[in-house]
Length: 408
Image (cartoon, rainbow, N blue to C red; front, side, top):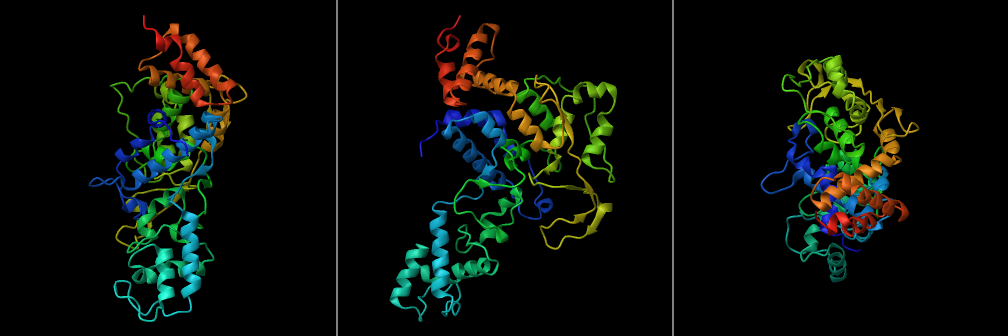
């Protein structure tokens, strides 16, 4: 594959802001034990999600066709990708077929001695497929995994290693609503992920634009308004205590509506809330949902089953209906049922395309645009449209413009 210039990836990282996911602390118990914060140099769960978001960006940029639209609407995601996945899956299948009727389980996995019943041909076969010097002691691990998936009628999962299992190596897949032990791992990536549409529904972006223990419709709506719709949202007045009141009987949206329903508040929140609430179909871990847990002690209906498991709470249906305005196109503005419909409309907006190009101008020029730069922005937009959506064409247009070559 052709390498992507680091500054191209960096632009989209800074624009979408999904690397900020590492700075949002999450409670492991609320995640049912799968989420791990960055610790001791480890990127944890958000680090893995960020890398997978980078891979989505790099794939779209490498194709260089309808880049902005594809980044906003693609359903193709990378989830726990591994090198030579198909080959490893075939190897696990071959190991299972070769040894399923043998005495593979007579020794413990920790036994470093070659298993006595194994012929030299079988030992050579095993070392070839496991690719370890001490492959004979890992046969039990490989067979345990292969049998697990064979019983479930699923292809072998290549994300495993001794002495760790898939629970340890890919728990972050739960952020995509994927349960690792019961997942039909794809032979090729990326692949279509249900209930996802572009970077704005990627778990890394959703976590980056969330609170520690809740979603953040205001921040998400503000991001869309300013980054994609070229709008302006004033800062919170110093006289306002911007806190959503607690209520164990209401969803976050209901509490937000009550807190911002005053006329003075809605002057600003009307630009953010109707957009941000459409993302309530995802929780603060990036998981798709249809009901919101009311996480208060009085709402517990079942206590946690393990050390890092979350209690089961009462729930209320998620209301993700919202409204889009400010695209400059009456055909796109209007009510939307959720974030997926919102994103579809945003991807068709001329204003959204031009707003992204404006941010590209600021990134590559190192300054904000001025009135004298209007022709440069027009030319960059024309270059994108005429090239079929090439971001490279935008960069070339910007870096050959008078705005870049000359300084007054």
